[in-house]
Image (cartoon, rainbow, N blue to C red; front, side, top):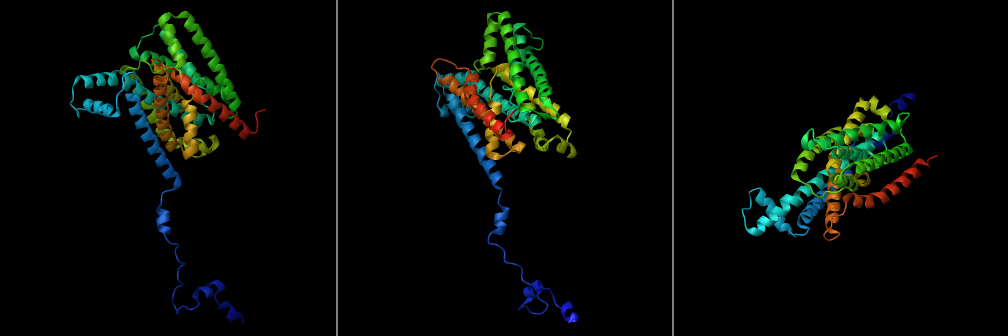
Length: 388
């Protein structure tokens, strides 16, 4: 009896060999139809990101064409494309109408559009980086006072007439002021290894108040020209954009964005928490310092020529995060495209909403971003369970 039981295969083995010839292997379970094809499909998140990139790029191209053709001198999209072709040597038409179109586009509108693209991309990227390094959804350059600090530095340079490095002077002073402001905010809002939401918001209120008082003092001390420029910084505008300013801004923003993209994968580990990131080999303090410097570089490059333009870095990263998730590399790409799109659109509205007038672009972004910030503040408070 024992020998019989010992030589008997298990029940499952018996069931799998019933009806098979001796020495035959049991048949493999049937494969699900189209299983290989389904496994080879791209994950849903990748498809969503691709469609988002295509949609943002297409919308950005369309808005740029509309913005280039809108104004006191109306230019059709075909003429805009033809003007670009003439600049590239593709189209050789040189009649008087073409010359007038080229003068309006290349002297006034294209510098302004390019500046809007750069500033929108820079502010959106800066907001995303601040939210990553602070670990806080409410971190944004204008909310926490970085933009105000940079504007204060630019205003000091204007009032005292500093020109020690030419066209770069205002940008350099704004960068130093913004960097100092960012460090003050960072050190003030940290407690027990984390950033507290209430402390961050209150620090931003204090910094904005001090910067506002400084701007008021400089307005009192400056002459008429300096006062007009300081008011311009406080309201934010792209009026009077020139290619020389774009030439100063472009390398600063390009360096900032390149470093931001290089840090994107590290920020994914950084978001796991400081202790987990350290265990995975991330130099947390070095990453944090580099991000702070890059945020100051991006914000100050934008503020030094366009003034305070708020809430771009708050609204865009959150919208993109709700669509494609928290991975920082795709989120950074989408935020750069979305920020550029938002600011070009806002500038188009600022130029065309009121005839023969140029509305402050900072006012328009605040009208959109203010309610969004209020909603985000309430949602964050509900998630935290109240702030005692």
